[in-house]
Image (cartoon, rainbow, N blue to C red; front, side):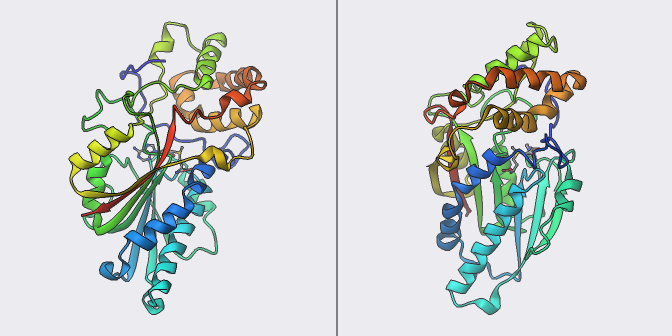
Length: 329
Ligand SMILES: C[S@@+](CC[C@H](N)C(=O)[O-])C[C@H]1O[C@@H](n2cnc3c(N)ncnc32)[C@H](O)[C@@H]1O
């Protein structure tokens, strides 16, 4: 698979609905990524968010790249709870604000499923914001807490080079305008070791298998394999730091490794892994090629990997999950 830009799609949402192939039912790995950062979110809010200085009656919180749930609901509930606990710890119970949550994703995301499954017991007002987080989504200085998990490295097309304005971290520049001074941005994202291209093809065996399945099912020819990309942007720590410093609007409060694999109960089964891959890239495959071939493709994919799930664990030397806290200056 290569970095050919011409055939990239504008957006390719996760598989919608609540069926057996849906992202809602197959996002366990992403759930563990966020779980691995839960205590750090609590700490970021307790130590970095000056709720007295923010002095607001409505606390606005955005989840960028929320998909269809349920992960976004778990994360948002945790953030809302942590902010409430911060007020309580300061003896400011009567000042606890109301919460307005903006769920953002591409317009093609299945917002119907998202909103149909909103928790009934929530302590926040919910609102959908369709559109790319690479552009402006909110009025200036209107958001107190911006959150994004497992979404920032996802590209809708392949930019030409790392520091161009299409870099996903260009979004931090827009986010800077939207955050209030003192506001916090928490990013949970996949990164690569220093000295690696952020556009490097994923090192996992599963992508080679997927490519061979695409060719064996006749969905693509060997020649076409070059026009199919899984567009990811995973900066190294060095590149990430340089981008934030170049942006100039944030202080880096924390950049830490997390290990989502430690939260998994052992390696994923071949079936679970196939469902995980299918829920995230079925949309891309279906848009790019003939959608009627998707069942056949993932059936073959499952057959190939069912005996090698151990090898499908993330290699921590290759792909590194990072927890990042930025504060608006
Ligand atoms: C792997 S899902 C993660 C969903 C959720 N945050 C979680 O952790 O389960 C990535 C999501 O990011 C969204 N996304 C990717 N690029 C985006 C962009 N430029 N603007 C808005 N959403 C985007 C995708 O549509 C997808 O729903």
